[in-house]
Image (cartoon, rainbow, N blue to C red; front, side, top):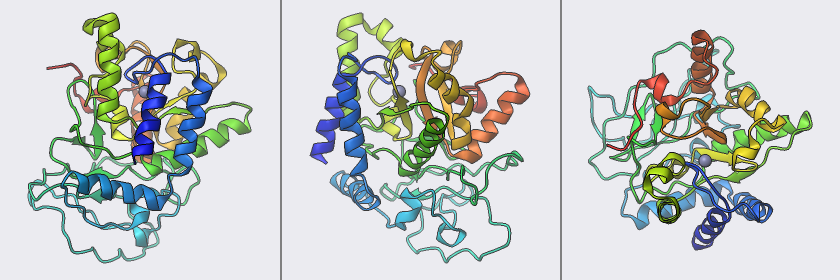
Length: 334
Ligand SMILES: [Zn+2]
């Protein structure tokens, strides 16, 4: 764990810019190697062990869930998906401790529910009911190569979810001790995206993934000291407000405006939704997202949701709908 935090710090200090908050791109290659090295060690086992470790370090109650529900988006079968355990507003009881019986196998598998980790004391916040919206007809199903399960839902007071989508922006922050690491399904889906891009001759690589509250605090304050708070706020998130702390955001390739318009950036913007990602800070949406255009920052939401957002965008004639627009929320420091 310490080693990873040091690596994260090292990586963060090597890069530049953004809600991402990266600095000095001089040794980007080094940072990539470090990052990928640390990721490849991140097996399912030690990933879930770390979640438990960091949770218990902070005094949370950790409810055991099957490893596959946390980490492995490719091998989930209907039998291995736990029953929906997010409390509904009508029955705001905490997440049950008794394991749900396996769902019966049917010919048409039920829509997948995100796995839930009860990271919280008994004062669990009520969950948001799953969306009842019908999936777009072209959305991949669990048996498809592209399919990516929804990310893990953490039942922690203080985290904002809408339709089981975690919201981290200027209006909604994450608790300082929320330390989930990079979501394993998000990473698996990124690898699929990366492989498919490579198959058409493009090189898309992971430059930055999970970032802790402490790291963001350090980076942000560095920018404020350099540029002043008003300017820093246009490209760097205040601690607790960075999407990277959610473990669901990835910065690819060169983390600055030189990435804009490259074949990789164009392909990423056109195809990332097929793997469960959205371009989080699109062009001309600074007044909505609160951040300048970031061609390199993608956010994992799972393929069900990414297709819903994409199809809604197509319907509206707007290429890149933001989470703020899709859910009707704002993003500014209150
Ligand atoms: Zn970023």
